[in-house]
Image (cartoon, rainbow, N blue to C red; front, side):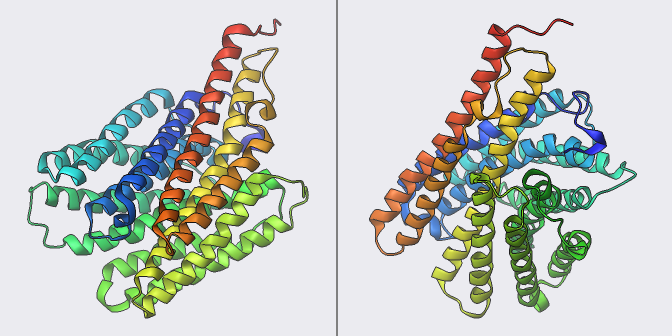
Length: 420
């Protein structure tokens, strides 16, 4: 199931490393739902501070939290990378990251230059440090898989995203005039969505989809060329923003549509076709990615605000669907794995930590919230309902994460170890 003949305790980081970031992501998800209630439809206008606050709550507070936590776990599992003193590194990154996100949201809310500079300091140091140590260890690998190569490109994309953000926040903080502010903003947006979020999900899927769901392998031409090709296209777009940007956007969108169709096909061809809500989440995520890219392409030719809104909503649900699917796979396994390897006689089974029926309930809430967002274009009451269901959605995830933490600690405290 894992590289190197199996995952050993020497390779695996402490469970606290992963759960710390996952719980943080769920908490920021609750914050995002509350903000939706207060801000209303202003979040759909990119020019408003409300839209910037919610976007960064979702992209940084939620998605980056889950993704960084997953990377701390996935680098040893998928790539065979062993990070030294992961608990200390994760603690340093986590504290600075949370302070940085709070500072950035405060900066957007108050427009205080000092908050922009504080956010730059915390987020710049912690994120670039995280990206740096992960890229350094990936470069040291002698034998790369398609997933480890993809992670490398995704982390490079994340690095570019962060560097562009630093340029913009230092501009807003009054450090310099920012003559290239809007160019940096476009690069930040492109690499954030496609060079970080999309590429990381694609890279992980090459191994995780086959490993977790026993599916046929992705075609060689997809695993070998898709990620670096999209990355190169983003670099070209950044160098020639005014000349070829629209054509490159269309090309990238078409590539993501192809990837999504192939992933759906693989999931339908899995060798163990049992009912699994995490599979449903993957399928749903790939489906909304296809529609997101269709709306994205349409928006290139038709300047329509509704097309842009739909593209954003569908893309957000693509990323969240995969994040939730991975969370419900990773967390129960980690609790069982660590407790079993510590020798506890009554280590809970994975179904005892998060029962499959609970994951199905999550899926129904997830899809229901998505449908409500679509109806929100008809009446404001649906916007309010969708916001409430988003709060319920992240509350549901947070509950199961906290229950996993409780189960882990309770077992350590009250269960006996096997004596050899």
